[in-house]
Image (cartoon, rainbow, N blue to C red; front, side, top):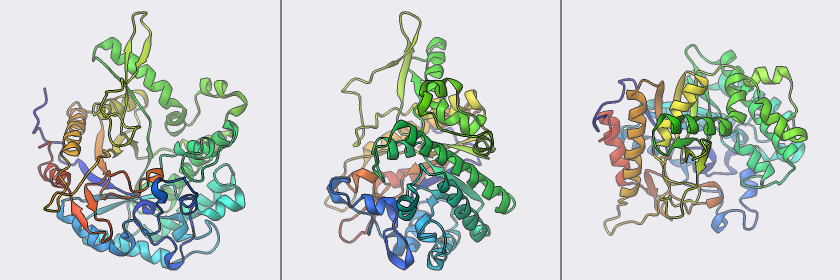
Length: 449
């Protein structure tokens, strides 16, 4: 049994995560071009309450104060993204120097506040021009343009950045183009959607190459993926093996390309004519060695061996606790098993929890505070799972909480709250929640408190 206050490894990395489109606002300021989300959020009925990214939490103008608040809360690692259309308004061609200058100011401010930037090249905001001119991610041209963009970014900021992230959740590209979930909201055939997914993976490989070629000495690069793992309902050897097998089948279609340089043959056979068209050279690019592998873990499934001795998933009964978003069942043990199974199945080296958090309903007290004890309790249980991972010697090195601020949550707009810091409507005042103070203590103690 691990004591609640058992410390994490001395070099354990604590951080928070956010993305440019969800917090920056200033959607058309200083030469920025529109992204697919800038356009999609204006489609009637596409986003809750018709919310747009136009202003968001105005991080574009308030970043310096935001970073001072991070410093005060003890946060020393920040996972952010750069907006492709702010750097290259059309996704190709002319460079927007005002966008270049903005991110240099961002990075310099982080350094002044003693915070290490972990820079993500892409977090959902494809330049709208590439969507209109070439058809977006189903086009083979997009990875080529992305490669040029990544080379520019690394060359420009190598003096300020040594931790890079290629793409956040590339698997979501299939949902965007095949299931009409999120921008650009297209419902293409499975064949086209799988091709879009393949191009996102290829773009990841080009980003790795850009860091290897142009990053400064000691630079590291990883990808951030959001697989759903099955965990043992009861921790017997039989159920653990069942959960491992069930997890492997679910995660292999995307994790095999990253970590083995190939798609599972059984998956390609099942897809038949809907399988992505690819070449050996493309798979070699996709499978380029990363320095760490990032897991975004919000939920999980349970599994067991049934009476016939067959692994099966256990359906989650309706009363099972969920967060304020319907898709998030509260399964804190998923963090432990996600890291363990990833290591056992793939041995990718260092593993980071690159996102984990909870959507909570909230209200301000008469004193103007937010007492989100539900987030604190969930976070405490999740971190004990992380503690178990590190205590057992698995190579998990970092935890990034999603997210620092309540922000734009894609099709849910501003209605769902994942932040450690609340944003007051109207004034956009930042109000640290009780959970921010809890996380501050965890970081300071390097232990669950």
